[in-house]
Length: 355
Image 1 (tube, rainbow, N blue to C red):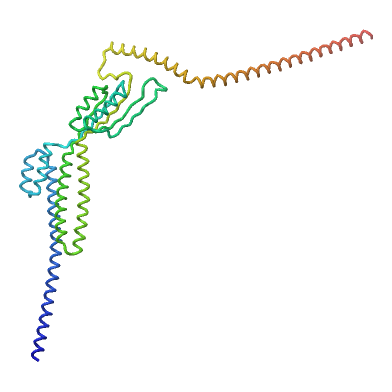
Image 2 (tube, helix red, strand yellow; image 1 turned 180 degrees about the vertical axis):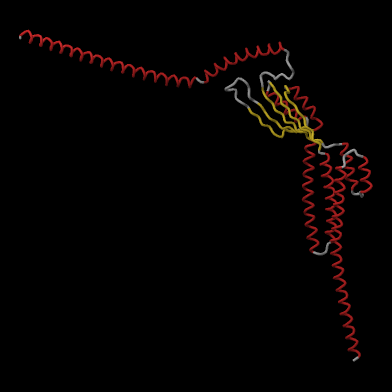
C-alpha cells in the first residue's frame, strides 16, 4: 500500500513538472517572438532617424558651418557618413553641363569627319546622328545638314568647343549648367540608410524562429532591395550625366557664311553687289539645267501641241471647203433662179406683144 502511494506521488510530481516546463517554454517562445518584433520596430526607427537626419544635413545648405555643428551635436555616429559625403560634395559639386551649337561650313564632309575624329580622340562618343543629304535638284544652294548628340568628358568640353569653332562658322552657342549636388547627396544618404537597414534585417532573419517573423522580415527585405536598386540606378545615371557633358551640334552646309559681326556700309554694299552677280549667274545656270532636265516633258508637250495644231488645221480646211461648196451651190441656185425669172419675163413680154 505504501509502495503504491509512493509511485502515485512520483507520477503526479512528474506530470506537474512537465506542465510547468511546457508553460515556461510557451512563455519563452512568445517572449522571443515579441522581442524580434520589438527589435525590428526599433531597427526601423533608428534607420528612419538616420535617413531623416541625412535629409536635414543635405538640405541645410553646403558651406554652412553652424548648421553642421548643431547637427553633429544631435546626431549619432551613423550620420557622420552623410556629413562627410556632403563635405565632399562641397568640394566636388555634381554639375550637368549641356551645350547647344549651330555651325555653318563650306566643307560639309570634312567638318563632319573632323568632328567624329575629335570626339573619339577626346574619349567621348556620338550618342545619335541624324544627317540629311538634301538634293540640289531644284536649287543651287546645298541643303545638307546634320544633327548630332555628342557626349564629351567634362574636362575636355572646352577643348571640343574650341575645335569646332576653328573648323566652322559658329552662328549660335548656348550652355546650360544644372547643379544636382543636393539631389545626389540625398540619394547617397538614402542608399546608405537602406544598406544599413538591409544588414540589420539579415541579422534579424538569422535570429527569427517563427514563420510569421521570417515572412515579415523577408517582405521588408524585398522592399529595401528594390529601393536600393532604384537608387543605385539613379546614381549611375547622374554619374554618367556629370562625367560626360552633352553637346547638341547642328551642322549646316552653306556657300556664304552668315556674318557674326556687324558689317560696315561699304562691306554691305560690296557683299550685296557680289551676291547679286552670283545670283544672276546661278539663275542662268539653273535655267539651263532646268531646260535640259525637262527636255523629255517639253518634247511630249511639243508633240501634243503639234497634233492639236494639225487637227485644228484639218478642221479649219474642211470647214473652209464645205463653206466654199455651199457658197458655190448657193450661187448656182441663185443663177438658175435669175435665169428662170428672166425666161418668165421674156415669155410674159411675148404674150403681151402677141395680144
